[in-house]
Structures are given as structure tokens and as C-alpha cells.
Length: 292
Image (cartoon, rainbow, N blue to C red):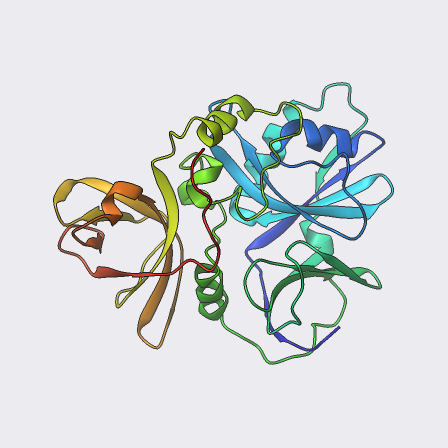
């Protein structure tokens, strides 16, 4: 595998699903198709409430014949593991926290590859992410760090925001229906699979043309935090959106934010209050399909 700049994502963890029913169980609980998951691809997936709100976002792949691993931000891992475990019932699937066994790295500057394609390197996997030259590498915790120059957490967060991608974090649990963070555009929702918690609402948002909020990319001169509110110049009392991800470098901040679509039509958007740092819109690196 090609050398790339790298960062150990110490704020990520791993859930293991093991057993004859591991794939079918995850298929019944998450927004993606795990029943047909092969060994050469990973799945972006969400775990929703019955009201279609995302409790967690993750990427999953086959680790063995009856084993699937899910990588996700550590701040949502414990609650996700606990809630998923409530639904196992008679399924032949054991869920556990496997974070101590694996090290997760974010890579920048990897060769071009289709998002969610997976390459294996001994006991390690490398998963191509949306955005130019980005990947996750998951390897045994005692394996040497991948070769390549080190990058900072802000370098990685900046690249994530530029890619128009955000993960559910502690501050944004239950804040979004998947489409509000463009999750279906990025490959995180399968609309042809069977039911899962919140499926009816997610499908309704897709097909009834009712979606009024989307993830957009901005730049500003102030630091931002996940969960921070965004306000429109014409409506200082009511938030127009929320920061879903951000990274700062050289005094500038790239922000991936969930925003009311109507707030993009005129006026200006500001961080924290209607008089806060102004957000400058940037183009998304992918197309948003028109509502049907």
C-alpha cells in the first residue's frame, strides 16, 4: 500500500459483532445492507432511533466468516453497544467492545480509490473514504504505525470537512435524520433493504420532498466546535444550523454544518450568534440529487 500522511485516531473505537447471525442482525438494525456485504468493501452505516434520528454513524466490514467490525467515534461507542445489545434477543450474535485490540489511523494522500472499497494488508484493512486521497486504516494495536509523515488532528478534521462528511459525535446524537448530513449521498443508506429502526421516517424524508436541511461546507476565521449553533443574519433568535465537524489550520476553519436550506438563499450565516464570525460558503465536492 502506498505511503501516506497519517494520524492515529485515538478518539475512535471498534465494536465486534460475532456469530452466525452477525450480518443479519446488523442488517436489521442499521441503515445499510450488511446481508450482502463482501470481503472487498466496507459499509457506511447509521444507527437510528425509532424517529429516524441518528444515534451513531460508523463504518463496518467483514473481519472473518462470522465476524463484522464496526469503527466509530469512541464518544458514541458505549451507548451504541448498549442499545444494540438490547435487540440481540435470540440472534446468534455477540457484541463486544474490541477497541483495545485495534489501532485506527486516518490517512491522507492515498491512491485514488472508490469510496468504501477495502484493501487487506495482512491483519490490517485500509478503507477508502469519500474525498480525494482519504482512507481509514485499522490494524492490530501492537502493529507498527503506518509509514508516512504525521499529520495533526486539525489536518484530519479539515480534510473531513472539505470532503463534506461528518460523523455523529456526542454533541450531535439525535440531532440529524441521515439526509440532513448527506448520509445517503455518501453511501450510508440503502433504501431497498428491509426495515430497521427509523426506516419509515428516513424513507419518507427521501421520497416526499420534505427535506429542509442539508450538510454544507463553509470557511470562517474563528475556531468552531461540534454542536455549536449557527445563526442567520435576519433571524438572531432562532438557530439556522449546527456545526457537525470542523478543523482549523493557518487561522482558518473549515466547517461541515447542517443548515436550513432556506438560510442559504440570502443574508449571511454566523457562528455562535447573528453577530459572530461570518461563514463563507464553499462548494460541496459531490452533487446533491434533486428531491423527488
